[in-house]
Length: 110
Length: 118
Image (tube, rainbow over all chains, first blue to last red; front, top):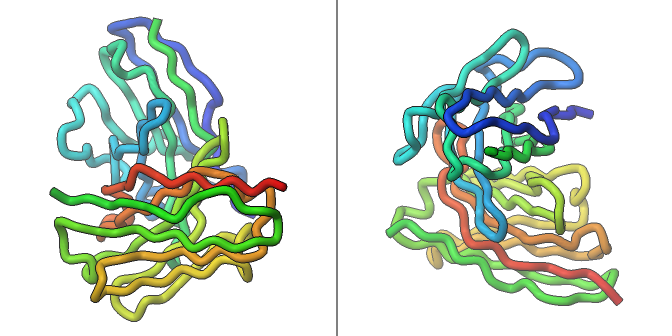
């Protein structure tokens, strides 16, 4: 069974840089998984931050970037702001019409 | 404005059934694959099911396979999720989401809440 891993929580200081990762318990994440990153605040639907590994969604500030780091997908926030405090989920497209979400990372900005 | 609006959630007893609907507007519904994603209380997101735009190919997560059925009516711009043999662990907010050519889910509804309890 495919399990997608994320750090459960992360903390960053305002103005700081943080990198959240998205891995697999078996194997490496590559561009073929077309990783998307979603931001979700309580009571709201998720919204796309990054899609197709490294493309910023419309309206997303350029302090957000996506990449592959080693064997994981990564979401980097450079110059974090208080508005960035949210839950972040990655999702991998496994092929054949199947997606698998990671467990999510709760990001605290303080 | 591109919009998805779910409905049909509610309280149901274990073993019961519900049908969720997702009304699409502001785009050509037939051109996009669609997904259902759920979120149990205090938990993360879980992909539940998807349906393609063309032939309407369907796929399911193992957790719902054999119990849930996804379908679409392009003439009504509506996506459905028929949920049978419901269990307590199916309790969640259910979102419909539009799929893109980049395997992203770029538009989400506001969600509808399903509670399975006696």
